[in-house]
Length: 171
Image 1 (tube, rainbow, N blue to C red):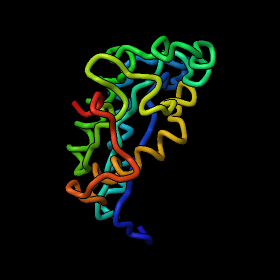
Image 2: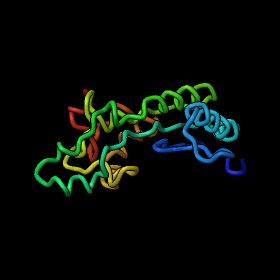
Image 3: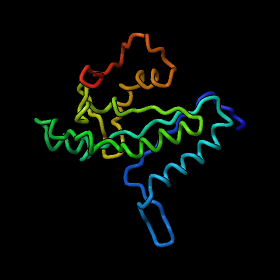
Image 4: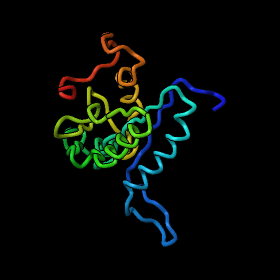
């Protein structure tokens, strides 16, 4: 509250999350638990920030990115993941609805990682995922302008110079 930030970005990972109850870990009702937790965070942050943006959860590969590509040096496509398996669609819907219900914006990052059917392991000659949970550093840097445009810090009509998405991911 003392800082009163102009912008707060909230990002998280829902992969393999569980809640802990008296009987131990459980993934029962995770969508409700996740939405309730996000709502509590947003209700605390929104009053002290000019803008709050929730960054949607990214698609996850079937196998750790670099490990898979090392195992298939001549066939990067072997490391692609079907979009339906990679995208945490239900959790993204929960996050989007929760963000909007609590006065925050929401950004869908799925188009930055997937076509309509697959989530490639390599885009623009860059490895997309470092492991099962993290974007490769070079790919993250490559997406900097795209994120800047998505959150309104870089004008959409500004030509992309250092970073641009291949046509296969923008159509």
